Amino acid sequence: MDPRSHDLLLGITETTRPNVLELSRRLGLARNTVQANIDRLQNGGVLAGYEPVVDLAAMGYSVLAFTTLEIAQGQERPVIAGLAEIAEVLETHKITGPGDLLCRIVARTNEHLHDVLERVLVLPGIVRTTSVLALTSPILQMHPSAIAAAELP
Amino acid sequence: MDPRSHDLLLGITETTRPNVLELSRRLGLARNTVQANIDRLQNGGVLAGYEPVVDLAAMGYSVLAFTTLEIAQGQERPVIAGLAEIAEVLETHKITGPGDLLCRIVARTNEHLHDVLERVLVLPGIVRTTSVLALTSPILQMHPSAIAAAELP
DNA sequence: TCGATCACTGCGCAGTTTGAGCACTCAGAG
DNA sequence: CTCTGAGTGCTCAAACTGCGCAGTGATCGA
Image 1 (tube, each protein chain N blue to C red):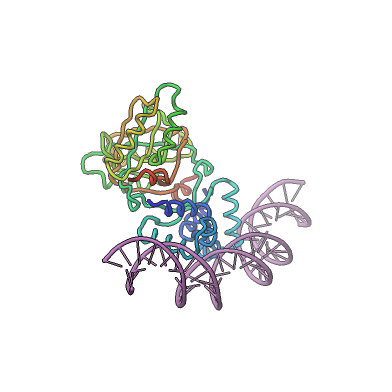
Image 2: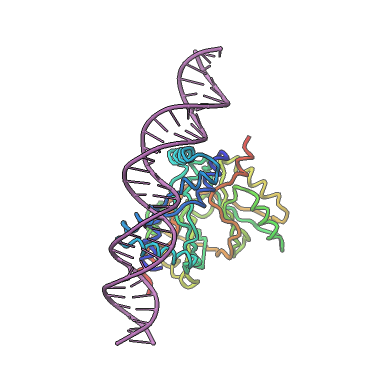
């Protein structure tokens, strides 16, 4: 991942907008209507922006892991701050149950993942980590589709 | 989630493009250069498209769960097909370790989640499910940032 | 039943962006 | 020393945006 591409992907996030005219043609609605609907979604906070869809595998990150962290009492905040510094940690969720944090981590190789996990482990307050590797990801979607809407009372 | 908004979000995925001219100004590069770089990323498969960023909470889906499924021998394919029919199941990963599948599931409420899990449980071949709820998600990013690039040899 | 409101439509116009092409420079590789 | 690739600067018609304004039909409360 060269820095140029990185800047590009970052910049894309900020300059990407839907083509309202084409959208209106596809949906069979007036441009004004589509624009108003988009505005409504944005104002409601549902539509928070636009992002490039990045194929991590094509980017060289072919390893995906879900790692559960157990944290010592009251150490969550600094641990999260530490995790935020590790680029390969894409998501962190505070969770219920035996673990405390669930992280989504990408790496180029298994060795690289090992390296990342070591950087995680040295964070003060981490008691234990458990990782599972994702082998394939047969389902990937952004949001619940119309099926869900149809089920509503 | 009304059907109109759904169509809109779906259509946005297909009609959204970055503003290359503005991007070039921000990056201090020529428009041609930026366009060529974007083409390169697309052709390389790294940049797979553009998507709206949807705030699931604002959309009414305030519950996020990670559910691990244990599947009976050789039943994975039909189970995955069944999961694909459930709109609330946003991601499914085949994983290593004790579980077989890890799912990311959203729901409007805990009751709704309960309902979704019941729909999951009735799929033939599911032996056991274990769910953890995500309370907060302090880190959320799309891809490893420049930090990772700087670390490369 | 009347008037208000709302979602949607259609039109228009100035300004911006796109897509495509061409010519040029510059640095590195063979 | 030449070739090649990356980047630049320019041009043009066509497309799209942002914005405003006027009109229609349906719904709803008084």
